[in-house]
Amino acid sequence: MPSAPRTDDAVLATTDVTVLLRYGLTQDAFRTALFGDGAVAAAVTLDRLGVVPRSLSYVAKVVRAGGLRYAAALPEPLPSREASALLRQWLETAAQLADTPEGETRTARWLDTVAELLGLRRDARTRPAGEA
Image (tube, one colour):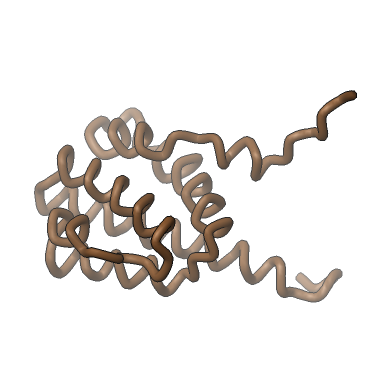
């Protein structure tokens, strides 16, 4: 029996965002991949977990105000336990590699990018068919 074809979302959901963070935050050559495929993959993954964009935007503000280590130590940075654990893993990776003002700013910008993409996905689902 043939398997169902994989959608773009299914392919993106298998992207290892942690690896993209590891290299995208530390090497300029990988920054495009982090803010491109990495941000879209993170948005798809968080969307599947029911995260709303404003929650992620709030975490970006926390990173700017308190730093990556502070944000990574939050007991529940997002409303759900599963989404919080995933985001905490991403924040801990970023904190290990980019614990500088520039790295924190870059990570907060990435989180804002993911939140924006998440919002676009949600808007596209609720927009009536044929409306641009």
